[in-house]
Image (tube, rainbow, N blue to C red; front, side):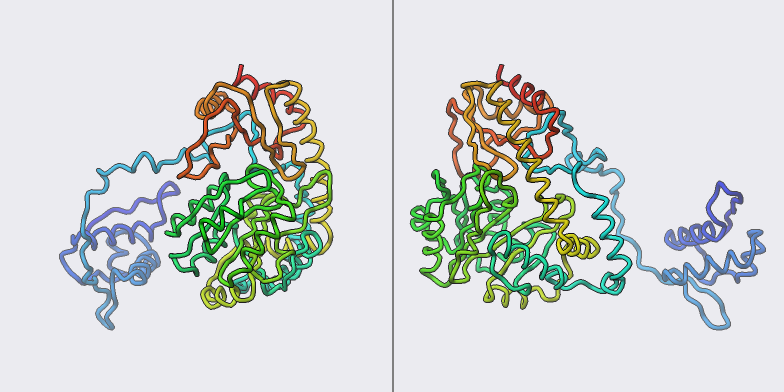
Length: 470
């Protein structure tokens, strides 16, 4: 059992060296006797203090490598041997490796519909309310959160969406989560796998893939100039329909009242039909008042309303919510009342004060004006640079719009050229669902996002975009 102890600041603590050596000898079955030397004897042999040996023995005892016998000392445990595999010669798969950066593609120009304008987020005010929460809500922060999120925040959200979106609900109906996807996943896990679900096409690819991965039958429904076709829904006969009526994603279409009523009437014909309304960026409207939510028109409690703070605040906060009708809420609570889920409690309580003190509504008002100006300038520049080669679907809502460009390039060509020239750009092809054949015509549709675009870089960004087609 001879080994040497190295002393000095460059080496691990003495007790740690003793612990490591003994542990390795035990695991390698290299000790000839099961009884260890006394603490005093080993300290003398190694030329160290008894305290160092005692500390090492205590750690080995705590981890189960040794045990103590009264009046006999410390004995080595009979430890089950490892099943050894030569994993060191099995390299880590290349496809799983990361480069240590958040993303490998670093665009110089962005037309992304995903990002928001973080430069104008009121960080100082947010921190002020965070500090208020730390000072006054230590008890709440020290406890496990409610499975649906703090009741006080749900009260604030219920009041806010009643005023801004006409949503009618009690705080008890609101469930807060770390994104719309996980909320939808939990909700749909309660439904029979035989359920057929209709989704918009083109539409939100992540919902489509989520539902497919859960083994539902998912029916993509084509759109017309008023949104999803109710006639096509009747032909496919689904039980659930996912829609974005206030600003269809990605085309931007606003569903008119007649189509909304037809959709609600379809649901009302059977008590087991539901509509999921994804109201992802309805806070931003530029020339008219906000359009009431589909849920506000529902008289039969068959619309599930989902909203998010990712577009209005920051995507990285990961705060979303859904409003469930009472029958679904009862099933949800039975299934998930034991779950501990959701975003940071500190951020949730901060958001409550951010809403209650009027900071959220003031922030939305400021950003609405900023986005309106940015959007108008971007449209002007696109028209100036592309002239008659571009058609802009100028629907004054949300943080993106659709354009059609007259070009012989294929969608694949456009996407590859954009990446090669460090331009973040999404074509409509990304949002056509997997089992849909993508039409290739001379008119190519692009999704133009502007939230994360710097206003003084708009002209340059448009010229960079035009270079793809020259």
